[in-house]
Image (cartoon, rainbow, N blue to C red; front, side, top):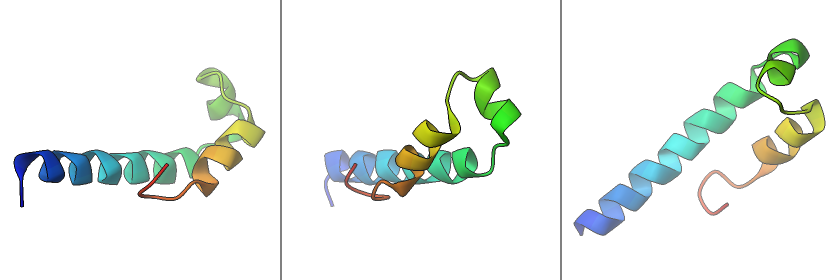
Length: 51
């Protein structure tokens, strides 16, 4: 496995973790970071690897 591929997989896994955390936020917490519940829903529905 090349170093570039390992980095890419790491980045994709971090996006997955971030989206999982985003899905757990309350509407008030989303408001604090400037994201609407609809924006969070759209982001969380993206593929865990390709988007």
